[in-house]
Length: 145
Image 1 (cartoon, one colour):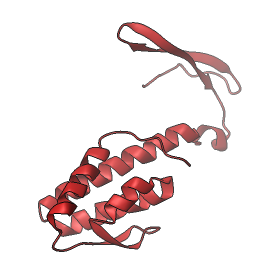
Image 2 (image 1 turned 180 degrees about the vertical axis):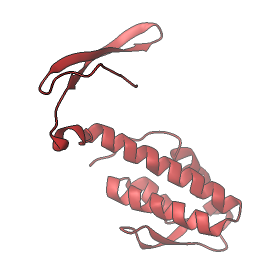
Image 3 (image 1 turned 180 degrees about the horizontal axis):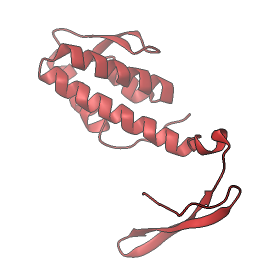
Image 4 (image 1 turned 90 degrees about the vertical axis):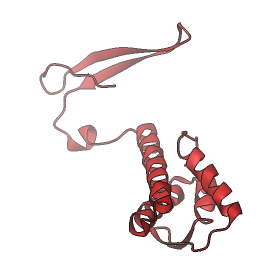
């Protein structure tokens, strides 16, 4: 969603948009989007916690998906970098299922920094885990934070 509103004086608050979620032609929920004009950097630069969570999950999904694609293309450097980032994000967001599956594809040396090594000679069962990881990366999961 992208909402643009005309500039206003500092301290002004205005309704920026009315949003409705429509499923099968039926409105299932509504929300108001407000705009507040401020010069307080802590207010305008802060990301809402739920938005930050889903942004992290989207980045996790992209890192895993692109990392697995690179691994299949024998691009070890890119796969290592991206799957390392995936391990880092999975650990940080509490996404234990994805983290455990990543450990079947990579050796995690330091999840905090995203330092991993690709596992060599991955057997058939690991290919199944890789497919599960690939599928998992395309859907959003609710995790505990």
